[in-house]
Image (cartoon, rainbow, N blue to C red):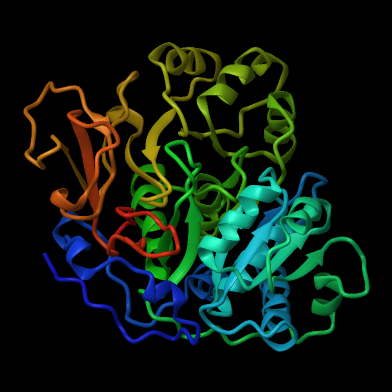
Amino acid sequence: MDAMELLPSAHVDTFTRDSLPPAARWPRLRYDLGAPRYPDRLNCGAELLDATVARLGPGRPAVRDKAGTVWTYGGLKERVDRVAHVLTEDLGVVPGNRVLLRGPTTPWLAACWLAVMKAGAVAVTVPAAQRARELAEMCRIARVTHALCDARSAGELVKAAVPSLRMTLFGGGSPGDLLRRAAGKPPSYDPVPTSADDVALVAFTSGTTGRPKGCLHFHRDVLAVADTFSARVLRPRPDDVFGGSPPLGFTFGLGGLVVFPLRAGASTLLAEWSGAGALLADVQRQRVSVLFTAPTAYRSMLERVGAHDLSSLRRCVSAGEHLPAALWHAWRRATGLRLINGIGTTEMLHIFLSAADDDARPGTTGRPVPGYEARVIGDDGTPLPDGTPPGCWPCAAPPAAATSPTSGRPRTCATAGTSPATAASATPTGTSPSSAAPTT
């Protein structure tokens, strides 16, 4: 185990680092669990895009839209770099500024996220369905300074009336549209040499136990979820086509539809959810091979499976809610494929308990993903014996510092091998008191 010490930051705006919890609440890093190690200077946007281009070339397909348009890795990099120039040169974004990203799932939304990463800023990606009151609260908590917003999703953000927010629309064709600005910028951008433990994103919880909480994740955390769950359980290939229903505003979608495919050199279909039938049609038309969605969607698709050619599918990931054994078996009977079940949380960034192939047991979630450990503990932090029904409570802080949502109820404590409890405690920002991220 290694003690956690922060590296020198590249952030000019230090709000997110200043909002981290006290060091006493951080976990110790467990490299003996198989968690990957990363260099001290690391920009996840550059690793996902520039490094993949260097490794596999610029001509491979990277992102696709519903209409069948395909951007190559080289084309995606040019678009991302042009947007990064707009951020830093026209909009005044400096490393560490929080940039809210809002809109339906499209290639341009993903390009904006990558540009924010390469510029060394902090992405605050929110679902397009969030209302003005929620948006205002999130912007207050994260102290958002800038916003890149799909023109179709601007209404509620305008209504939020966030003080001093500089909002730039894209896709609407206005004179100041982000895409118009980007068209005149150079097609190459030198990424900011962020620290591996500089905060890359603020991900908000759904607020089911109260108001949403902002969870802070480092640049290395973004890569760690790809190098643990994706690389070791999902096992994607460069010729895969990813697709699914989760929006990029949720970390399930950000990981499954952006981070995982780019890390593997694969391509991804980025299209907003429009129903089970449309998703099946997309799988058939775009030859999707890796699918991410929730059990509710798999259940809805079962009724229509026979009308579509799903022979391209080889991996199907289910998360977001309980996956009943009956649904697992029904999907296998209908498609011949075993669903990969998983538990992930915003606090942990992505899936940390899962099982695939011969390790899968219908009705259960699985085992700790390599790089993580999990144990069932009581309120006093004492491990409980096998057979005790747990509540699931991911935490990265020492058990004594974690708080249980239900007093007296056992909980599962999952820790990873890279970052501290990356959310502020007892700060005016309202960030989560015991959130976590995967480790390096």
